[in-house]
Length: 175
Image (cartoon, rainbow, N blue to C red; front, side):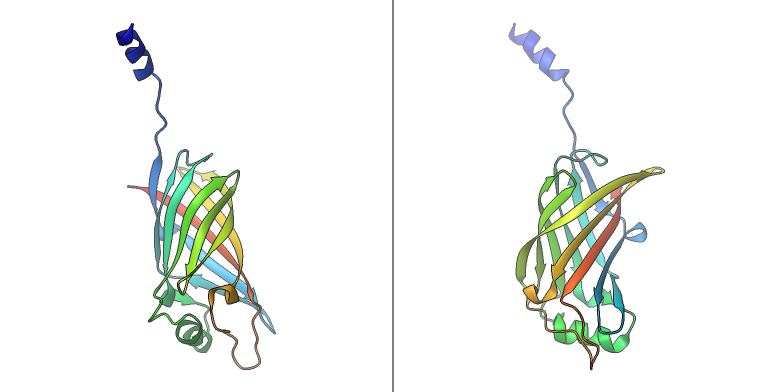
């Protein structure tokens, strides 16, 4: 009987997780915030990460971590970018911005966002779409930069809003 039970349970498929790294060539991390005159758009140019899904198209469990090199954030205006990196983010002291996924539930990831050694729980709304031979995941979050001891990045009379929208679009490459 024990042999029959062992044989039966060995035939039941075991769910495998899908472990993947972020494919930097086909992914993006962007941010936007309002200012006195217009919306400021920015991008992270250097980042890496690994995400583990139980099912990459319809996940029920997700874990992972994304690291952004803080000195790679750019908005396209050198004076503003220099102030952002040196004054606001102090990238020499705090070189990384990280997001560690702690839980997943029905289209939303919850994770710990760390900026300047300040960590807050931040939800990301997640959508996953199959495109050709790959799956593209897009996550959006809204944060207040002042919650992370980030100094005001405004320049001259062009003040910026405290609310920032972060959008992470990733194509994952299996290892």
